[in-house]
Image (cartoon, rainbow, N blue to C red; front, side):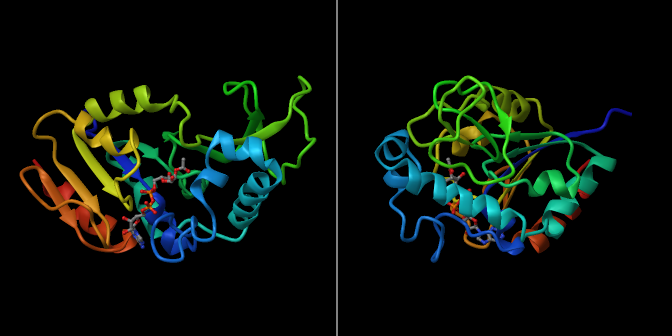
Length: 229
Ligand code: OAD
């Protein structure tokens, strides 16, 4: 029998229990940092060192964190379902938990690219510094989608959501578009489960809100999914 397809949309909240800070909660990542400064092409042009250091710090932090039960439950779900994880996160915790089909909407800390070519990506395990050049002789920058830049994976992500039988949303404030609009690509009536301790929408019609942290909430969502006909 063909496996049902689940599209999982994750945000910073799924990595919170691993010790990765979210963006907009108190003490979030933006605190002390102006978004314009560290997450726009303009900010990078103005002060590349500050921006590179911001992402260097996040990249170094990856070495100190581990996937949590929510990441692992999603990886295990592949035994019984076709699962595609569409994440706004730039960490590699879904990969390390064992998920196989992952779309990074906002880029990846462990990749870099030159400032003049958003398509040729290089592995990036260490800090990037001003003066570090691509093989083509151009300054390198993190492979992060900054505000005001295109989100190249959005079309593919929309197709995945549209063809899903079930949608699960975890740990996102649903404030950043186009990612926040992806749930609207689901076919009418598709069951949608949204796990977040401070959800930004209420349960209604086909949307079930599970007000809880990711580890417990994802376990509850999976129980409900297993009850579906
Ligand atoms: P936000 O920081 O905006 O939202 C985090 C969400 O996680 C909030 O709704 C919290 O309630 C929830 N949360 C906190 N702790 C949680 C836990 N233990 N379990 C589950 N949920 C929890 O982060 P995002 O919505 O992911 O973009 O932000 C979207 C984008 O904004 C990011 O990808 C980033 C930023 O600009 C780029 O870097 C381009």
